[in-house]
Image 1 (cartoon, rainbow, N blue to C red):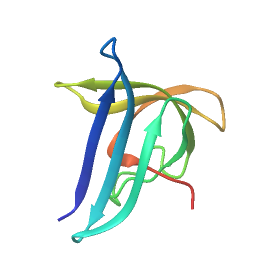
Image 2: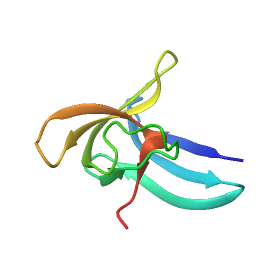
Image 3: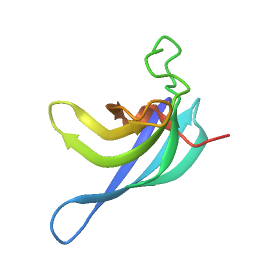
Image 4: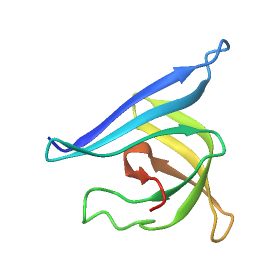
Length: 95
């Protein structure tokens, strides 16, 4: 099984404040981490053909979960301080 398991946690106001992410490849857990606002991560999609933003370092500024677009985060890229939107399943910790 390849994929990502994401569990989100909401505040009292109904806003998502953190998400627990587990990434799997061939039934083996390759990473397990928690995302909160302000977390610094790196974009590393498991799909090798997905090259947009690969290996760029980011900082999470908010969560953007919707039925239409899936589970994503609003980020700031640390190399040029621009904003963007990245799927949570494409993020990983620094090595």
